[in-house]
Length: 397
Image (cartoon, rainbow, N blue to C red; front, side, top):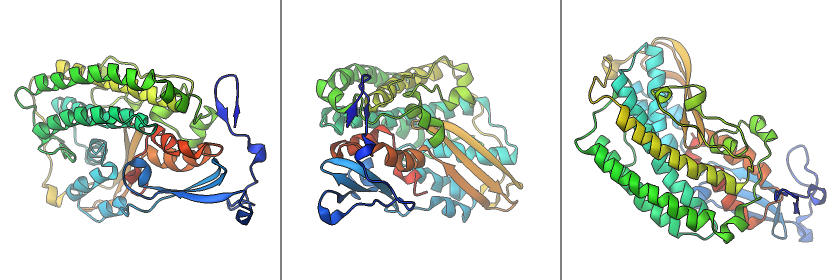
């Protein structure tokens, strides 16, 4: 590996064999110079839901191929064979860790194609649910980055704090993981009595966590040694690969669907997405830490500014016999990983004609990861994968 003056590691490709047109390498594995190894599949975390076929020279990766198919999902086709209300309960599985983004996008597709206008109060509650979903996701991935370099304590903190947010989801929706709160036409209920105070109590603990995780991870010499300058993502690749969310903002691209294409009530909130320029593993994690801080403040703003009461549902047809007019639409929102979109086509029947998810994980964890791993050390594979923010079910959708 070569290291330049900006502390950015770049692979010395001159010593790597040339790839054939089919992506194979002209290497003689029998010579023992190049060895093929596998990481995964196993399931103790994000990095285990996929399998990586690695060709290495010593401990350096010269080629990486992503293999998926171990989750066996195919939810897009399942939705196309179910009525709309049944598809709504299916789509949330396309990202188990952050299901509410699927609820919102699926509901918005149905509403746009049906011409349904959602009440303002429901939009405030939808925004609250989406930010809560982002919060609990970040409480997993921020300390999870440290776990890839041996800092497991942060994960234990994050699990406890995430449970506090899941407690709030449970009292709001009745469910901890799958909520099915954002439904076509609105939401399922108002905030319970005392909800805002209990949420604020949890947010204060998360404020303390941000201080503690900064000391544990971001000021840690070992964590810096393992992440600064490692996994550099060239800004020229951002548009080429369709990189979004924290990965793009860590490379200096100020991209956030909530700002670029405002939806719900985000134009009434005061915030700015955090950006940086070093574009390595450390910086991508740093951006997510700041996203965590921003999300906490957004939840506080939403709870302070939302109306005290109001209509939370628009009138809809009988959901068991709901025929959506013929048409097509694309809707999107900002997930914790970046732009998360749904494309839906209807033909006037009780079933969607086509449903397609545009999740950032497909780009980040397949085509981009295969490029970034070339020249990396095998010890950094998990750290690289986690830094890109992957939700594997999005790939096998």
